[in-house]
Each structure stands twice: as structure tokens, then as C-alpha cells.
Length: 114
Image (cartoon, rainbow, N blue to C red; front, side, top):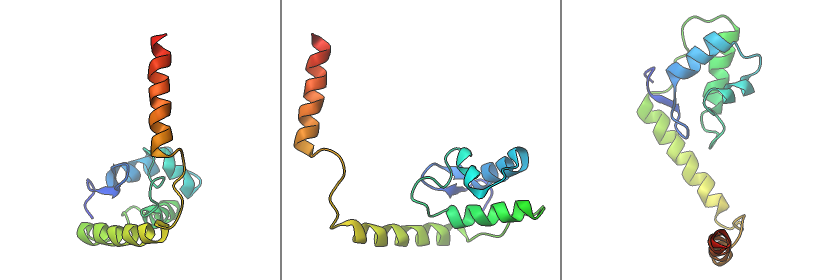
């Protein structure tokens, strides 16, 4: 993975941004990497890679850890997303139904007019 390629695909956080964040901010916990433009707070695919980078930084590593090639990284991420989507198909969607959401938006629109 090149330095300017996205490590966190959800929020487009590059490996370079994470490395700079680790160098400048010196977080005390791996979870604090979320302060780096939201890295790791989306689908969660990049969390193991972020933890590895954090451990390497804590150990005083100068070289960033070798991560997967970009194509492999994205392919594995897509496979994981497909598996997760398959397990969620039977779950009820959170939030209002489409019909109720439309009524609420119409109500909001008309209440602004008065």
C-alpha cells in the first residue's frame, strides 16, 4: 500500500495521514486514531491495520508496517462487506418507514411556511 492511498476507505484517510497523526499527536490508545479524520469509525475494516500501525509507533518503529497491496486490501474489504450485508438482510431497518419519513419531511416543509 502506497502512502497516499486510502487506509480508511469510508472516510478517505490515507496511510500518510495516519502516520503523520501518530507522529505529531502521539495518541495513548489505538482508539484515539478516530480523531484522525474519523479513521476506523465507519465499517471497521481498517481497525486491525490501524492497531498494527499504532503498536509499531508505540514500539518506536521508524518504518511504517508493511500492509497489504491496495488491490488485495480493497478486495478483502469488499468480501467482508458482502458477508456482513448477507447477515443483515433479515434484520429490521432502524428509523422510520419510507412512508413515515415522507410525511415527516412534508410536515417539516409546511411548518416552515407558516
